[in-house]
Length: 75
Image (cartoon, rainbow, N blue to C red; front, side, top):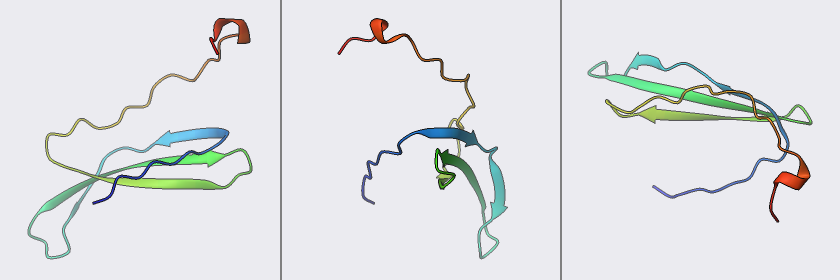
């Protein structure tokens, strides 16, 4: 599988959805998925679905981003 790096500019909202469990298509095993939904400033968005291995730590929703002043950020 490839490694993908991308940039999403000006995200107005990031939602981390709860882990969902479902059966595989042949019904022989359980699958776990979790989604991240990013809504951009223009209202368009992206949904990333992650298939989790057993024992993986799920993503957690954190606190809102608070920007420091310009003077507090080094170039």
